Image (cartoon, rainbow, N blue to C red; front, side, top):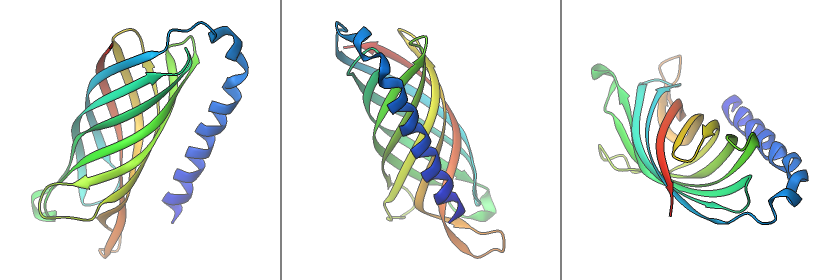
Length: 180
């Protein structure tokens, strides 16, 4: 329950930052709106047992509403690795939609995404809600970001050894993007 409260607070904080940044809307009147496509590699550390590491790849479609605000659609594949004696790895396909707001020098941004994680390995079939706040840096071609990603319905192991629910990861993303 504490994790859910932390995630809710983080999402609300990011949304509040998005709303305060809207005061400069007049300077972006003549911005050329358009699509961008990016391909990224992700590496992370899982925050709950039995998972240890996370590796993945993704594709992100981004539509620039203004010079500062974009909407995103992201999918790919992520694998949460476990130790040999603690069970089986969990691989899944995330499907997320989000908002990206550039807050400093039109290169540093805050982002928030939400969606679903569809498991595709080891006969695990519980689809999980996922939420993912993050920060990053992007220029014309490179996008580097850090994020926390929480999966509310994936199985975990509590500190007392009982079965739990709600996995997460802290990860870094390195991506190459271009205008369509």
